[in-house]
Length: 271
Image (cartoon, rainbow, N blue to C red):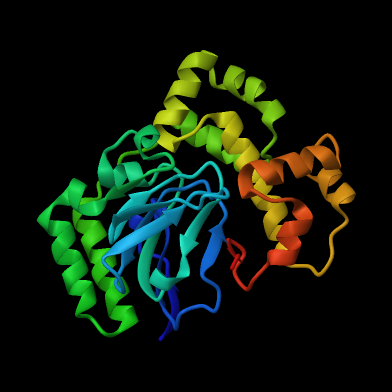
């Protein structure tokens, strides 16, 4: 039992950030908030025959999907059921990486869970069966990596999008988008359409999400935060602007985030 991660060998590592395997006792809390990340994900539940996501409102309406899904990228946080998060595996794709596996426009994947069998049929079913009967987590990760290698192709991101991603990851400021587009030499419409197709969201939203992620990861490491300083250091107009972004992406205020933190930066226990 435990939590294991691995970085796949080249050239798969250009498309996949990590593979992970979680085999742990049930959590004490029932629900968990998962913060959004820029890339899509593959989830394979080995404990139950479905995955569940709940609406982030008073209704908490549940959406049920198959046990193996490709989901995201997400534009805001999701709420998951920890009862199914007992024995589960996954793949974290780099931005644009899931397109290499599915061939789908990333806009189709945005904030959706699509059954892996719907895309790969019996191959996906056989993969899950193989994983269910593989006891060792390192071997399970090896099985999953081999399955990916046999099905993933290596399309290159459009050079304009690759350049834009490198610039935004160095300095994720929305105000730079216009200058970035002019430097690339595409029209704003064409650039935005190409970016959404390969990444799953518009460039401004992507830059905002990157900046939010930087703040979250910084805040997760410390006991207390000077939010005014954090807002200024990360290019927000003021603390109210930062609080607005927290509500947009995380569904909570910065102070609520600090109070809800757990051992994992992306997962916040609820109840």
